Image (tube, rainbow, N blue to C red; front, side):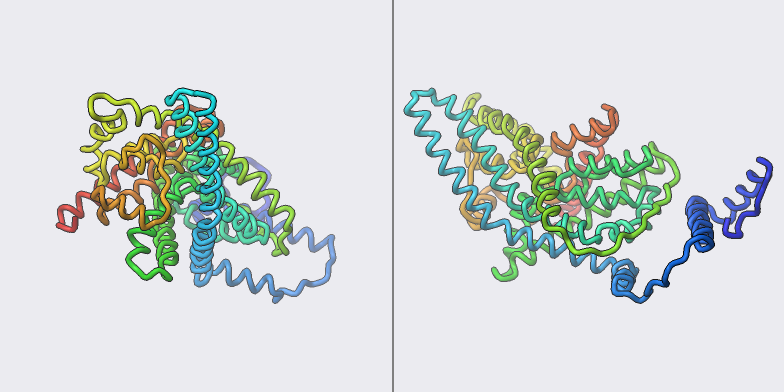
Amino acid sequence: MNGNIKPMTTLAEICTEADKLRLRTGNALGDTIVSDIYANAEQITRKVVTHKQENKSSWDAKLDDILTSRLFGYPIMLALLGLVFWITIEGANVPSGMLADTFFAFQDQLTEWFELAGAPDWLHGVLVLGLYRGLAWVVSVMLPPMAIFFPLFTLLEDLGYLPRVAFNMDNFFKKCKACGKQALTMCMGFGCNAAGIVSCRIIDSPRERLIAILTNNFVPCNGRFPTLIAVATIFFGGAFSSEYETAIAALTITGLVLLGIATTFAVSWILSHTILKGEPSSLVLELPPYRPPQVGAIIYRSIIDRTLFVLKRAVIMAAPAGAITWILANIYIGELSIIGHLAGWLQPLGYAIGIDGFILLAFILGLPANEIVVPILLMSYLATGQMMEFESFDELRQILLDNDWTWLTAVCTMLFCLLHWPCTTTLLSAYKESGSVKWTFLSFLIPTGIAFAVCFVVAQSARLLGLA
């Protein structure tokens, strides 16, 4: 091949030459073989095909030299990531508020209909204050960020930039003995971890596909962004003047995303050296040409295939969760509701990891849909028996401070939100894609263990150093 391997006729000669090549190249044997195959194909093509010499200094080649270079490639990736988050955060505020006003205004109409029908209070509570209000929260909080994020993501995909991201990240994943295509599945996870797990089908190796499935949860999805945005804006952006508030919040979330990516690399490396041992497969990736975006395709793929698909799954999971949460908040044992008793039981564990029992309980009850974590927490703090909405971050800040939140509570809440277990939809997707209860359980156990361990270390270290 390309002069590196001589023509051979016997199996023994082939095996001997392969052993020599393996000793010379180490783990790069697969890359060498693939390179030689392409080189030989190019030589054969030159003998039978003639074509005009292309201009190698064209604008797209120059752009590739920048976007895939070690010097500029990674800073550009980070800058684009931060820009996408900034646009998503800044752009989602107004439509989210408008949707919330519309849904909660219709809630008042539903209440009037229930009163006219003479429905009992408990039925109104379960269906309106629990189920409907939970759905209203999910749609109003989740739809605007997705409607902004997914088109931006699809635009980068349509322009041909995402394959360049996979090319840049391939070296890191190869060092973890994983596949460079995992970078693409990781990007999909920013919109929805369930969609990210489904996209793992593009990875040919079953071993590397499992690694991608087990680690996709470490990038935050749209369901976790509301909690991250709220806490980052209040406790980090709020420390600066209002004109810098969004930018600081975006930088904070970008830093958290980088931590999630680093966790992805670390866990991928551990898995590939323990229960999923193996050599990385070669990423044969031909970078597609840059092209103008197709507006129709962007709208269809981002809105129909992604936004509505993910929203449908979230709504199906959130509806019963809202009803169950209302029931738990309105059934009293003694002077406390069931939620109050559960939060008290979880308080020691919550304190150990830098949060409190109510926060931990909100994450547990938010298992069906991460979007309802904040409203469940507010309902628990205010003891209203129904999911709460807040008019501004100032109002939410005061509620949190009244319940003894500190900078350590904020940091540990954001870390736990980033690293904790997948939602029900993601777990179902993991089961469908892996076809195994074992791997589905591990996709829950691994992030859960890491979330508790990281928050425990941070909380105990801060207290030991007298910082909290």
